[in-house]
Length: 537
Image 1 (cartoon, rainbow, N blue to C red):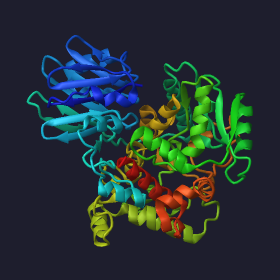
Image 2 (cartoon, rainbow, N blue to C red; image 1 turned 90 degrees about the vertical axis):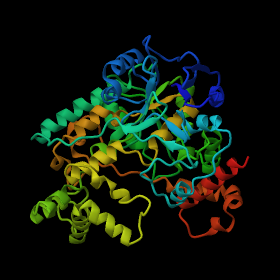
Image 3 (spheres, rainbow, N blue to C red; image 1 turned 135 degrees about the horizontal axis):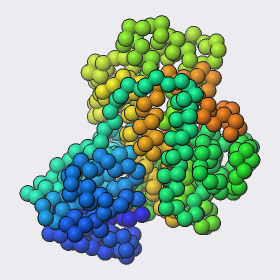
Image 4 (tube, rainbow, N blue to C red; image 1 turned 135 degrees about the vertical axis):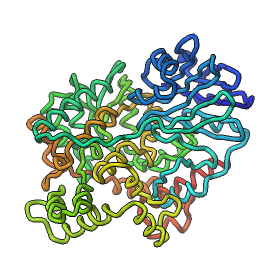
């Protein structure tokens, strides 16, 4: 991976930006200055156009495409990347981030100077003073609310959204825009068997793309369907790494992991969990990245990444994104309501995963209310109702913002969940992997695979007995996964707060640590306090 930072306009020296990343190199093109690390990953491209990429794109091809097509070249780029393009002849360029926001890009504007970097810590090193906390972002952090805007915990430092780009213009001004948006096309009719075959082929191709350039890849395997799907459709057998919990039967998936390995002929490492401190892991993360980890489970998974790195693994695949990719298109119920088909809405609600053959009428009524009536409300009406109830004044529709997308409700919700990274999961996973010294890749977050999922008939995603029926059909007989109950790790966090984290928790929160709050709320409050103390040195 390439860490980079730069400025457009102004005269600021960018060399200091890469201090956290070791040796760096710099380049000054007048209005544009760049710094990058490691020094060997220098900008390339063509004689006319510079191209600096964090990702696995061909700089020469991207530069030639920019000379030919201008900013529209970004719409052709797939995979994970963040880049800088600079046309020396026309004195113009671009900074941009991939469609799904899996590589980092952060910006800070002051007057006619734009500063940018692949990580917040590099941007902080460019600023003369550390910005104060962003009060809105801090409030959302404590409330566990994901904002739809680009705020970070630092006032004035913005996170480039997925598919975000900024054009650097010859007159020294900038123009932000989105280089890609999902578009609705009516899915062609398919049988369940045909769709399952497409899913099988699509996942296999996505896994193969994720392995591109990996020298010693492996797979992070749980007992669930998603990572098992990646394992089953990989082009070759991959060594696997799993966390097991012999002292926590409620979350232990050792038997299911062993069954999956046996069915696929895989080898693997089972790493037993040993209780440690969640806040100690958070302190390490803040020291490294100048931001808190959004996940309370770093203390669970970081040792597994470190073990894989110690064994020589350079790329670790996972099953991240599978729930959203092939999950149930619940808002098809709303489309039936909007079309004046109450019978179809009720029949569809009865086929939601988990309903069974004889669903409780209360469950069906609840599904019709949430996924039908509420989902069918026009966006302006829904926004007005929420505002009247004093909810989400900062973000309009909040978690319902997807209603503003074109297309039927089922598609709009799915497109939003697959292409919006409001929680910053991509940043989180990238940083966790970098701390361990390897790269995490997510085959089920592949752009081509997402395009496939957005064009499958929504009714094929319904099954009253199991979630993700198309994936199960695609892998029938290959892996022994009958159910997919998700283990909850809250008990591990509770034990951490009652054990190794107890003294620090009391120091950070005082009497608030004894309040009747969930462990997740305590984690958020303690993490914010740790981060604030870090700001003050």
